[in-house]
Image 1 (cartoon, rainbow, N blue to C red):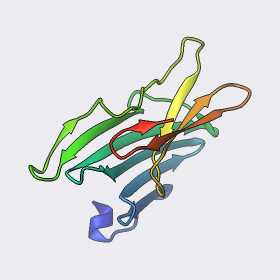
Image 2: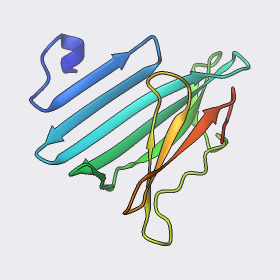
Image 3: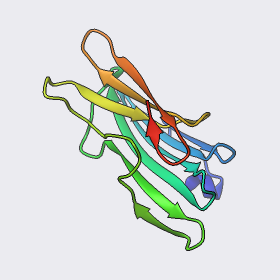
Length: 139
Protein backbone atom coordinates (compact mmCIF):
# COMPACT_ATOMS: atom_id res chain seq x y z
CA UNK A 1 0.00 0.00 0.00
CA UNK A 2 2.86 2.37 0.76
CA UNK A 3 4.30 1.76 -2.71
CA UNK A 4 0.96 2.54 -4.36
CA UNK A 5 0.65 5.75 -2.35
CA UNK A 6 4.25 6.75 -3.11
CA UNK A 7 5.22 6.61 0.57
CA UNK A 8 8.63 5.45 1.78
CA UNK A 9 9.00 1.96 3.21
CA UNK A 10 10.01 1.38 6.82
CA UNK A 11 13.67 0.94 7.71
CA UNK A 12 14.94 -2.49 6.69
CA UNK A 13 12.26 -2.96 4.01
CA UNK A 14 12.76 -3.08 0.26
CA UNK A 15 10.29 -3.60 -2.56
CA UNK A 16 11.28 -4.60 -6.07
CA UNK A 17 8.57 -4.24 -8.71
CA UNK A 18 9.85 -5.41 -12.08
CA UNK A 19 6.85 -5.25 -14.42
CA UNK A 20 8.95 -5.97 -17.51
CA UNK A 21 10.03 -9.36 -16.12
CA UNK A 22 6.80 -10.13 -14.21
CA UNK A 23 8.51 -10.18 -10.81
CA UNK A 24 7.85 -8.62 -7.40
CA UNK A 25 9.87 -9.07 -4.21
CA UNK A 26 9.25 -7.58 -0.77
CA UNK A 27 12.11 -8.05 1.70
CA UNK A 28 12.17 -7.22 5.38
CA UNK A 29 15.36 -7.20 7.44
CA UNK A 30 15.49 -7.03 11.24
CA UNK A 31 18.79 -7.61 13.03
CA UNK A 32 20.07 -10.97 11.69
CA UNK A 33 16.69 -12.02 10.23
CA UNK A 34 15.55 -11.59 6.63
CA UNK A 35 12.15 -12.45 5.20
CA UNK A 36 11.54 -12.49 1.46
CA UNK A 37 8.16 -12.67 -0.29
CA UNK A 38 8.37 -13.17 -4.06
CA UNK A 39 5.83 -13.38 -6.86
CA UNK A 40 6.49 -14.19 -10.49
CA UNK A 41 4.63 -15.34 -13.57
CA UNK A 42 5.48 -17.10 -16.82
CA UNK A 43 3.56 -16.87 -20.10
CA UNK A 44 2.75 -20.41 -21.18
CA UNK A 45 3.57 -21.65 -24.68
CA UNK A 46 -0.14 -22.02 -25.59
CA UNK A 47 -0.61 -18.24 -25.26
CA UNK A 48 -3.79 -18.89 -23.25
CA UNK A 49 -2.41 -19.28 -19.74
CA UNK A 50 0.11 -17.89 -17.29
CA UNK A 51 1.76 -19.83 -14.48
CA UNK A 52 1.97 -17.73 -11.31
CA UNK A 53 4.19 -18.54 -8.32
CA UNK A 54 4.23 -17.18 -4.78
CA UNK A 55 7.30 -17.93 -2.66
CA UNK A 56 8.30 -17.12 0.93
CA UNK A 57 11.79 -17.69 2.37
CA UNK A 58 13.32 -16.75 5.73
CA UNK A 59 16.98 -16.45 6.68
CA UNK A 60 18.80 -16.01 9.96
CA UNK A 61 22.52 -15.15 10.07
CA UNK A 62 22.74 -15.82 6.32
CA UNK A 63 21.36 -19.37 6.54
CA UNK A 64 17.95 -20.64 5.57
CA UNK A 65 15.70 -20.67 8.62
CA UNK A 66 12.22 -21.71 7.51
CA UNK A 67 9.20 -20.41 9.34
CA UNK A 68 5.60 -21.57 9.32
CA UNK A 69 4.74 -19.50 6.23
CA UNK A 70 7.77 -20.44 4.12
CA UNK A 71 7.14 -22.29 0.89
CA UNK A 72 6.24 -22.05 -2.76
CA UNK A 73 2.80 -22.29 -4.35
CA UNK A 74 1.74 -22.31 -8.00
CA UNK A 75 -1.43 -21.12 -9.71
CA UNK A 76 -2.53 -21.28 -13.34
CA UNK A 77 -4.20 -18.16 -14.74
CA UNK A 78 -6.60 -18.47 -17.67
CA UNK A 79 -6.31 -15.38 -19.87
CA UNK A 80 -9.84 -15.80 -21.33
CA UNK A 81 -11.77 -16.29 -18.07
CA UNK A 82 -9.39 -14.12 -15.99
CA UNK A 83 -9.51 -16.77 -13.25
CA UNK A 84 -6.67 -18.39 -11.38
CA UNK A 85 -6.65 -21.88 -9.83
CA UNK A 86 -4.12 -23.68 -7.68
CA UNK A 87 -1.85 -25.80 -9.88
CA UNK A 88 0.08 -28.95 -8.97
CA UNK A 89 1.02 -29.84 -12.57
CA UNK A 90 4.20 -27.74 -12.79
CA UNK A 91 7.01 -30.30 -12.98
CA UNK A 92 8.26 -29.05 -9.59
CA UNK A 93 8.37 -31.72 -6.89
CA UNK A 94 8.14 -29.37 -3.94
CA UNK A 95 10.20 -30.67 -1.01
CA UNK A 96 11.00 -28.58 2.06
CA UNK A 97 12.64 -31.07 4.39
CA UNK A 98 14.44 -34.33 3.75
CA UNK A 99 14.66 -37.29 6.09
CA UNK A 100 18.26 -36.40 6.99
CA UNK A 101 17.26 -33.01 8.46
CA UNK A 102 18.22 -30.99 5.37
CA UNK A 103 16.01 -28.14 4.16
CA UNK A 104 15.30 -26.91 0.64
CA UNK A 105 14.40 -23.36 -0.39
CA UNK A 106 13.25 -21.88 -3.68
CA UNK A 107 14.11 -18.63 -5.46
CA UNK A 108 11.99 -17.19 -8.26
CA UNK A 109 13.72 -15.60 -11.25
CA UNK A 110 13.88 -11.84 -11.59
CA UNK A 111 15.49 -12.28 -14.97
CA UNK A 112 15.28 -15.38 -17.08
CA UNK A 113 12.71 -18.11 -16.59
CA UNK A 114 14.26 -20.71 -14.27
CA UNK A 115 13.68 -21.45 -10.57
CA UNK A 116 16.71 -22.00 -8.35
CA UNK A 117 16.43 -24.64 -5.62
CA UNK A 118 18.97 -24.60 -2.79
CA UNK A 119 19.50 -27.73 -0.69
CA UNK A 120 20.96 -26.47 2.60
CA UNK A 121 23.59 -29.06 3.56
CA UNK A 122 25.68 -28.07 6.61
CA UNK A 123 29.01 -28.06 4.79
CA UNK A 124 27.90 -26.42 1.53
CA UNK A 125 24.53 -25.64 -0.04
CA UNK A 126 23.79 -27.42 -3.32
CA UNK A 127 22.03 -25.50 -6.13
CA UNK A 128 19.64 -27.08 -8.63
CA UNK A 129 18.13 -25.21 -11.56
CA UNK A 130 14.60 -26.02 -12.68
CA UNK A 131 14.30 -24.92 -16.31
CA UNK A 132 11.10 -23.44 -17.74
CA UNK A 133 9.81 -25.57 -20.64
CA UNK A 134 6.81 -23.47 -21.73
CA UNK A 135 4.22 -25.06 -19.41
CA UNK A 136 6.22 -26.99 -16.83
CA UNK A 137 9.68 -27.05 -15.29
CA UNK A 138 12.37 -29.70 -15.70
CA UNK A 139 16.04 -30.23 -14.86
